[in-house]
Image (cartoon, rainbow, N blue to C red):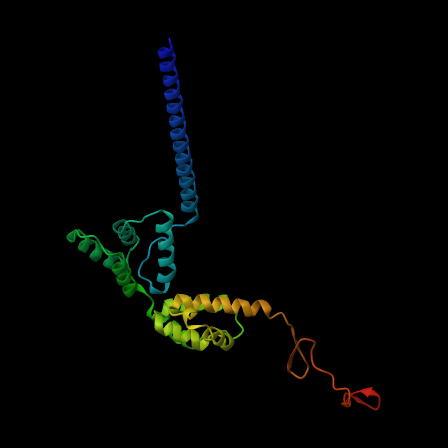
Amino acid sequence: MSERLGSLQINEEASIDKYKQTDTEMSVAQATTAAAVSENVQAGLLKNMVPDPGWFDGDRSKFEDWWRGIRLFLKGNRVNRTDNRITAILACLRGGVAGIYAQKKLDELDEDNDTQDWDEFVKELKTMFSDKSKAADAEWKIKTFKQGKRNTVDFIIEFEALAMKADTDELHAIFLLKKNVRHDIIKTILGYPPIAMPEILKEWKVAITSVGQGYESTEGRQDYKMGTGTTYGGRGQPIDIGKSNNNFKDGKPK
């Protein structure tokens, strides 16, 4: 009898362990399914938010906006494989020089079975259709683009946009930042200990933003524009008690 009871107890414990394992597996499966559904819902929302960029006919003045649109479209629709991305872009090139380029590139892809390089394709596309006049204009602007009274974050954003359009290399971009950012910001950064000194462009932008925001948060004083054309901070122009008032003549305002 004791042996039989022991066997029943073992079987019961095994059943409980199996139930617990099954329950755990079901919980994991449900969590995985819920996460997948949530991810699909988010992907669907993102897809609906990103508009179709439409065709590109080779008009170089429109390339920058179209290129930004097609990149967002590919990302929103999760087109991640290089071959699929290139095919989707070529399908959007219609008419004129763009159509001719697309046909030429498609013939090359048919003959070459090797995996395409995305960076090389992007470089080639930009070389073909980027507006060179915009690049030249940006190159000229970035050399004289000083921060002045601009908010530091706004300045960095505008600087990055110009640097991208002008295709400015990293070393030259750092040189221009050190030259054109507010002097007190650069002076503070140059006072960092060697171990904390920024080296690459990304580090310089982070340091400039951090120091600039620190200065801007403490610059709470208001300036008042006086009639003399001189700006006085704080409480305004100091009063000289001993100075005669020449604004009146014979007791009457001039």
